[in-house]
Amino acid sequence: MRLSEPKIRHVSEKMAAWLAARDDVQVRKNKEALALELATVIRDELRLEDELDAEVEKVLGLYKQHIESENMDLDVLRRRIKRQLAKEKGIVL
Image 1: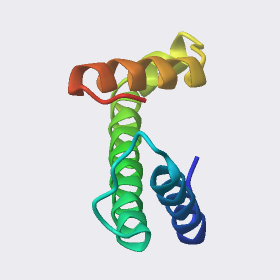
Image 2: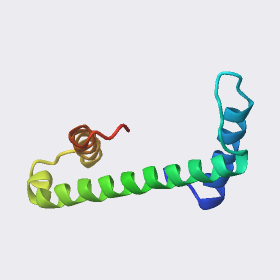
Image 3: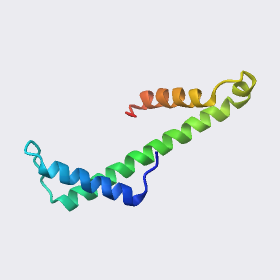
């Protein structure tokens, strides 16, 4: 699921407020600075997932003829390949 920039800002602001309000979390920055850092992390994670999706499509392209000739379910293959590549790269989905 792709998040828009306003949604990323909204989620990061909510997360920063939630963290700042907790007694068991020590926030060393103000909420605005924390929200900016959280937004950066969210964007980085989304970019990483986009790169993983591109790699999945590349793998599927390599085996396109075989997939079509065997009438394989493309969505199932896509999920399996993505899960395997993520595991190999140490990415938590």
